[in-house]
Length: 527
Ligand code: NAD
Image (cartoon, rainbow, N blue to C red; front, side, top):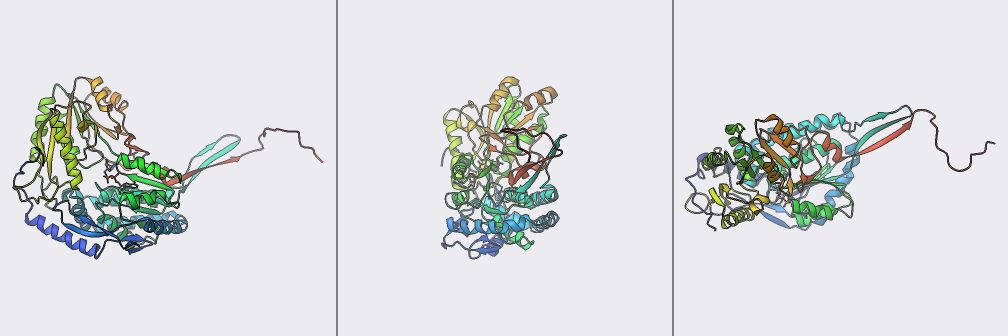
């Protein structure tokens, strides 16, 4: 390991609470994935047609969690045919009946909150203190879009004296939801709930590093009464199952959350069958802190938005741009905070940062820090951890890191590290802050801290990002548009924006009187 490797302070790996929660999670995994975690095709859990499986490993200690069915083109074909067969009757369900079912699914998820939380922690290494809110957040997605069901087909009307134009919406057809590993349960519900509310059937392909809660979601949805085929689930890799879904002729649209490179591949894979795409991709979101800001609140928010969820969140505020007048003191306060963060067993209720998802992800995070240091940067705290602690050496441990002394073009400033690493740059004035913030291929979120009202409005209109958060960490209101510009995505989710993606809008134009119709050719002869 590199020079970033260090010894961690004594931790809670073997605390009684952590051990007890781990035991409960292992029992749940056995129950859910015995002998294999299967696909859900036409309402039934099934193995792969090829019989192939892959091993899902723990990010905590590298042990095997379970075997998962390895989907391929034949499994995808069966799943998409099932979705296509189920589509006609599902879209014809009365909206109120669909609404009631989605509420029932939400209630079922809430009842299984503890299982969802434990499985998510086992699979991803996200601390329990965050995953215990996962079921409620997923249920909120179902409740929210359930309430919109009865309005989904509504359109607009544009009357003139001679013509009435009005629009109606219909579900586009079977869609694919392809989701990542960083918040697997929440992100699956974020795509599946609006699609079902719109009247679409769904084929879901979760990330291969985190298959567990996707299976539980499908199982609970069927237990709640979802008809067979309305939701199909195929496990497997992006290269095989993922590619097959994006090329399948039954699938009309792809709702994708994941990396920017993958998004671009999916776009070309789906091009031959003209798939509609909605992309929520990577980010390198700046946090801009002016010296007139409420610094106590800003410190808390900056630390939360880069170190919570192990730094593996698309909306992480991973580039801190701080006014030069307060740079040193602000960094000092952040470093103190970062050092106090409890890294350890994610099954312990006190843990704030758990292991990163995979050894590849850990290697990538270490590489970014090592390269930055080689280029002269200062790493004030953090780094990889191994040995001399009771943390298992096979886990992917990395303490929250803060790096200064950077130039704007360095990879650690420009690329998505996707770990608990904060890159810091100073700025002098508003113009420089704006230039630095927009100097990125990404455009997901920008966070701004200032008490200067006019400046807040001015900058909010000038940042190149789909979302701007002023004097706040991320705060979701499901009616507002969520999504990125530039390399961070295509399209918006939330409220009616979701229905625009999952539905076709039809315009109907009706003449209201005998208006004059333009004529060409010879006048018709009256007999
Ligand atoms: P990834 O792109 O590697 O994988 C995402 C999903 O795509 C997985 O299910 C994977 O199997 C599948 N996939 C991979 N190649 C495919 C292909 N050729 N065809 C079809 N499917 C394919 O992303 P990841 O590493 O799982 O997740 C991390 C990324 O997700 C980060 O970049 C993060 O910023 C992004 N993300 C974005 C948002 C957002 O809202 N913008 C939210 C969460 C995560």
